[in-house]
Image (cartoon, rainbow, N blue to C red; front, side):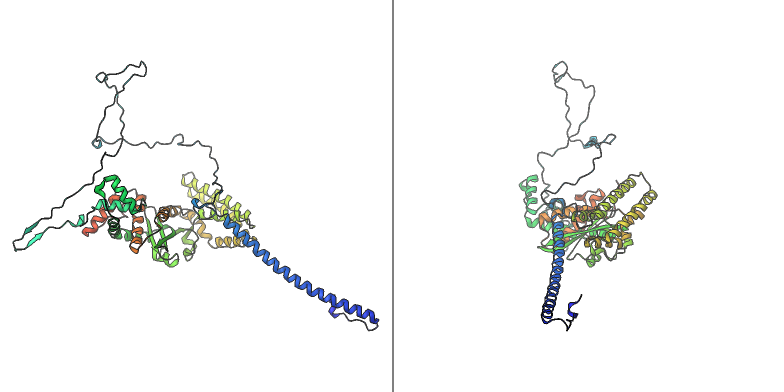
Length: 496
């Protein structure tokens, strides 16, 4: 009843009228107070909801580790449980039927020294053999490799003569272009560049190693090492550009990016990986424009995470990394925001999915059978994502909606298993050496250093994928650069 509309009857006694008027006033005051209280309660409820969300987010961040984020295991806080794997029931070590990987014997022409070793004593009767007694009944060969007692540098003295020409002028000889007018020869320069990049050694450590290996004859300055890096970088420019142009036309490429530094200024190191090539590129930005500067108008499939730089790509031309999605769903479980069930069921489906994928890789099921088995998995996964959209956890709802928007990009590996994989592991593995190197060197100190990193990482990782010798390639690249001849290629893989 709205007391403000209540009219006090005229026939009531004056004391009743006074009492009723006073009661109406108190009721109106109470209603006003209740309205204010309700407003405060709603405000407190909103504050409580915000606080609960903040607490959930803080707990989520506190519980972030390598299993539910992109953090490496080295950044896991103390007490983080180790990843658990289901026991296979197999014993440790090589399994029955495993083909051994013993070293083959060297051919006779490769043997430098030969030692004949005979038994000294009979283990049965304890009789000792004299040096003249034994007659060999059979012989077992065993080869051992070792370093020579002294590794000497090859020192070449150039005697640059001056002779008289018939024209009356004196002509002085110059050092051949392929050898370079430098104290350090091409193979040693290539070795220093390899130590600085592949083996992530600082210039001072390279100095120490050279002296340890070759003695005081190998004393060199840090400036000399820096000059070697600059020349090697120039020598690798054409092979690098050739590899970059080739990977821009690839059918599919695994792509990833990580931070890099130029004098403590944040840069971004991008990588694209195929079966035979790993190409690196450093850009000031981590954006769609940077991606296009790296790979141009790439028309093949891109296997990557869900980073926004790839958002312009059509879902039909992408493959989302399921290893990243595993961490995302595990994070839903660890957040305790109301989507734990969605996360757990999704992880179960992904486990079944990868079991089938490995059966396909092992040749136990055909591609047709693989796609048939995935029909039910896709249906169940789609229902999970639609349920996830309605969960009380807003972040989980947004995450599930984004995956539904990218639906074709989750399953393209089923259409083209010949060129696609369900994970972006090759790119993550490819960028890992650079991440370790960044932690040791803190990045680059100049633009020249950035180009050296791009080119050496590209050459080293590509040659390793192809099983080719790195030192020989760099030496040949340096020699051809000096003479202006055709450099070696990262695209052509020599037979044998």
